[in-house]
Length: 428
Image (cartoon, rainbow, N blue to C red; front, side, top):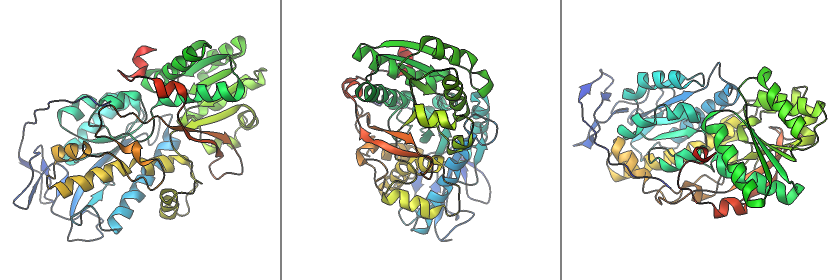
């Protein structure tokens, strides 16, 4: 469900440099000349074909100090590989190649830093190939909307269902948690649920989904907010071991999740954990929590893991030879498909500009994810469309990224019936 915004764009012509980049103007292509931020007639710095122009996309990710760096670095590297493959295959409409390497910034998973580095690059890019994090992206959403700047998020908050400029891939955290609770009711006959989560619209969105599913099934529900940091999980562990819920829905970083699962198990907890997608990292199999994770933890996910047999997964693996497999790569690769589809539609439509890209997004009824997700996950044309399918993975030390699918794409009864009339986290 995407709201529509009437946006006035003030055109400001300011020629940047001999590189041919124009700043602040969004008038598209006129008479063969390029006049849009982040679009040049000159080739990209590492062009495959020097006769093509260049579309610059920015990346803002958690590359060093934040809780998701272990996922964010592979996400970013996968997207570089994705666009390199696009360029080798002829680029966008036979006229442009795409550069996602020149304007890459580290947000340290801090909203203030995110806003600062966004302001440093926003006049040089057509859109954002990646904006990592829910609270961090929320810090720039007003400016994205004001400037018609399309962005692909590295997050799954339900807030993105209501933002035209955000082209999300996969179900939101709220749907993911709803489906997880419904799965646990069917599979483990759970009677009580506790949501243990980080603050903000990452953790709260999943907690709200868990609450909705618990209420629908008449389960006891408890909500526990916890800070980020593996050494900061004492209260969460105490609440789990004291209340002994049948199911814990975890929405934290991977190190936090390992601490919570490992120490809760050590204290005698025998219930089930289902962690949202970002709670898992294959390195956890080398941690002291590995036995507890194998025994008690499953991962919910918006997409299939590294080993999946789809053309998109194969293309990703082929494009990333020699890397240590990590489903950060899988997510990063999958997240790039809607932007490619929108760029293709923009160039085909002849309006190469920010407003042209946004208009192209609104024409997309499906996106070809090469099998990584169902095509209907890419419906940005229908204001009421919310993709509601997720998966459940189990820990498997024989799998390349430590997890294998135990329940393929499905929609539980809570998500099927739920009406999205606002972000879930606002209702927690």
